[in-house]
Image (tube, rainbow, N blue to C red; front, top):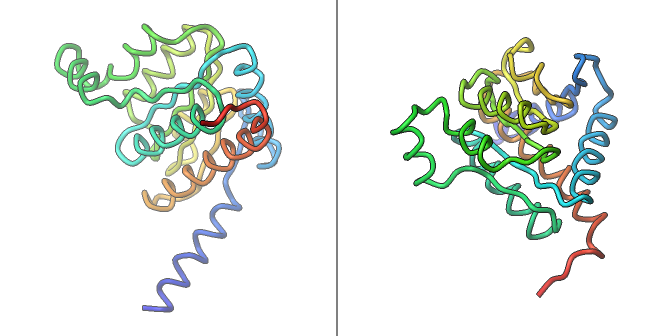
Length: 197
């Protein structure tokens, strides 16, 4: 069992260092450059009062909720994840599950809000529709995907992060680590601006 544990974490550690970042034209960026650009995008829009919108399904929804909470509570940036059960079931029932992110983004997103779209496969129709709605609203987009390198989500963002793995666990942990690093750096840089009670 010990060998399995060490092998798992060794593979995860190596994988985190192979995350790829690309820009809107598909040009490969050094990972630190991609992360810096994502941080700059969020901070620049937040300085004008814009919000960050996170979307994801399943484990990615949990990442979205967690990071939205950290963004607003600890980073003093307005943030939201559209994961409320009433919202999801209402839109699924009335329109179809493929619209669960598109409809609230159409209603609540403002120009220059930032969408962070998280999908392990990069193929979820509701995520892709959410991205389409954000683009129509004039929102810059950050994507996080995995599995196949040619997944459709990977080509939709201003900045795109891709984890080269077909394991849900590895991809989700990598997305969470990436999100946490971005949000933690933002929190660190904005700490003096936040009022804590």
